[in-house]
Image (cartoon, rainbow, N blue to C red; front, side):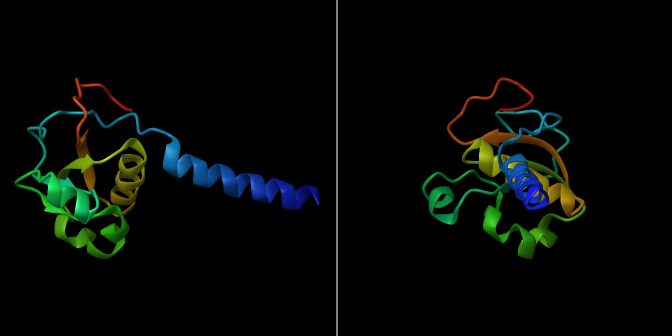
Amino acid sequence: MVLTTVLIAIIFAAIIYKRNFPIFDVPCEKEKADRAEITLDIRDYNVSDKEPMTPSVNIPVAYLNRNYQEVLGKQVHVIASNAIEKNVGIRMLRKKGIEVVSYSLAGCGCSGRKSV
């Protein structure tokens, strides 16, 4: 009984961590950082179509596992809709070996802060 409760708590904590715990070592930049080779828009297709950020490659978070090869080996600036999408997307890209050098949240004026 206690072991089951502990296992459930660990699984729940891992899920909360992946989605909500901020990523501290990637700076928020209003524009693409100088080091970034490519801008990756991880917002949903219907959102990025209404508010395009050009030039950028659009791969929504849900498709990152299948299509990350398009940005493999490049330094990336990430555009996301919100903090949860940013956290999940950057973690997925790092897991695949892609270096994320900066990010921006659509509709949010970043001022060089480290994390949201």
